[in-house]
Length: 151
Image 1 (tube, rainbow, N blue to C red):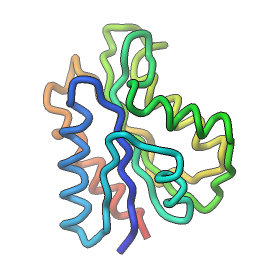
Image 2: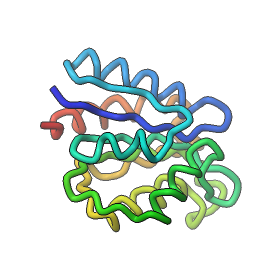
Image 3: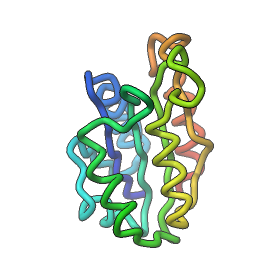
């Protein structure tokens, strides 16, 4: 059983809906999962020896949603090395905005966590709203693989 923090970046609620289903699935698989909709650095650092899952939509020109931006900025500014942290990223976007912007928020978080020496448990999942109208159709199979990697 792992302790997993699920940190959400959402504007219109799509990422939040996915995150709620993810937390239910993690809990059903015996893990202790906590959802953070207005995530703070102190909450994030409570998981530095555990597992975090970032679930974020992408806004505008590939930016992070306002509710998760302060966490990203705090991690980037304080730059705490997290060699014992394991993580996963589910990034939601729309490929019609162009390759550089597509899933930009999740890509930024993934890159930052790697710079902080955290270890990914699975390849980042990029969900294209142009292809997958129901994000859970691709999230749940990915989550199944992610759960197998959680120790």
